[in-house]
Structure formats: C-alpha cells, structure tokens
Length: 258
Image (cartoon, rainbow, N blue to C red; front, side, top):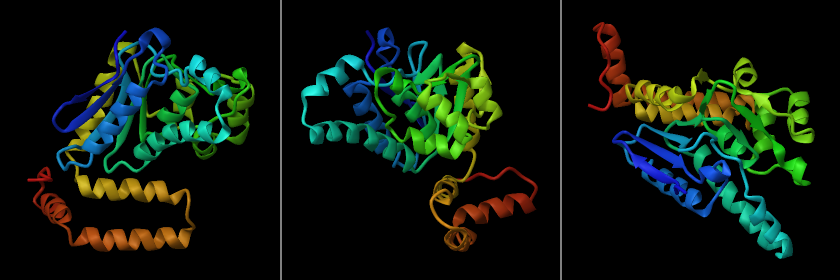
C-alpha cells in the first residue's frame, strides 16, 4: 500500500493520493498531505497545486468501514469528523493559487466533492463522477450539492445525488465542468502543462481573479462591480501591470515576477 505524499516541484505542488487498493479512499494521511500542501502554497514561489492519485482511481470518497464505526459516536462528534473534510474543501477554495485536479479513473462521493472544489479538472477519457452516498443511505457532504448546483442543471444534480447515476468525463466536459480530457497516461502531464501556462502569468493578479470568480456566485452584481473596481484600481498601480503593459507595447512576452 502506498501512502499519500506531497511532491514539491519548485513552482508547483503535487498531492499524490495513495491507498490504491481501496481506490484512493479518504485517509488521515491524505488530509495531512493536503493541509501541508496549502500551507506551502502561501509561499510566493508556488504557482499552482495539483491533486491526483498514484493509482488508477482518483478518490472513492469515505471508507465505509470507518463510517460504520462512527454509528456509535455522538452526533456532535460525527459533525466534527465531517468538519475535518469541510476544512479541506475550504483550504482548496481559499487557495492563493489555482488548484487543478487530475482525475484518473473517476471520483466518487467525497472524492467528487474534492475534484469539483478545484479550479480546473483534467480527466481521463471515460472517467466517471459519482455521488454514490445514497447507495449507502447517506447524503452528500464536502460541498458536493453546492458545487453541483453551480455547475450542472438541477435535474442532473438530482440524477447524480438521488439515483447515484454516474456521469462520464465526456458529459462533464460538454457541460464545462471538466476542462480537458486525456488518455490515462497523459492526465498528469496535461495538468502540469496547464501549470506551465499559469506559471508564465502574474501570480498576484491570478489570485485576485480567482477570488473574484469565487465570490461572483455568492454576492449580488453591485457588490461584484465594487470588487472589480477595487481590484482594477489596485492592479493598475501594481508592478505586474507595469510589466504586462510594457511588454504589450514593446511587442514582447512579459516576464512577471522578475
């Protein structure tokens, strides 16, 4: 059995989920690695975080043997355990840099929640996204219903959550949820190619854009206009814009972060 681990690759961090014999089911080790990754993501050298797996399935969600053992716990204690997962989702959503999920095989349950919390998804051709909670008499967690409500039609969200209907990566791409499809061996390289593009851009402006897009789902147009005004007023006076505008006028590639 391989444990999850964090690969520090200079300007990017790669979280490798292990536990392949259980299709990458959630584990305390994975939680610790994700926490470590997003602590390091605060460093200016980091341009993106990639979440993927060593095995052929990204993440099957919660370990049912662990969940059944929680039956005898007090409800407040069970809430605390779920909050541990939700804290991971909050880390992903509040990341200062883009987060890309490279999905091999599929993502189920809380594994789908984690994938959908990311900014972009590269998925293996034929991979399936499944909200399989209902098959075990459970309900979604990890923000899955919030993510689905923003990304897919209500009827499809109900199919996924009430019927546990798997949805292919191809359909998710058609809906705009999956950014790119790749052959199994190319999923991680394709995600890293996206990081290469991100790394050429302005880190701070990218972080501001990421925050703007995230907040747009939760606040009204007036508040969003104010956020864009304040962001543009800041950006126009920042070093990144000075370099970007100069590069455009001089007909050369910008060198951000130099």
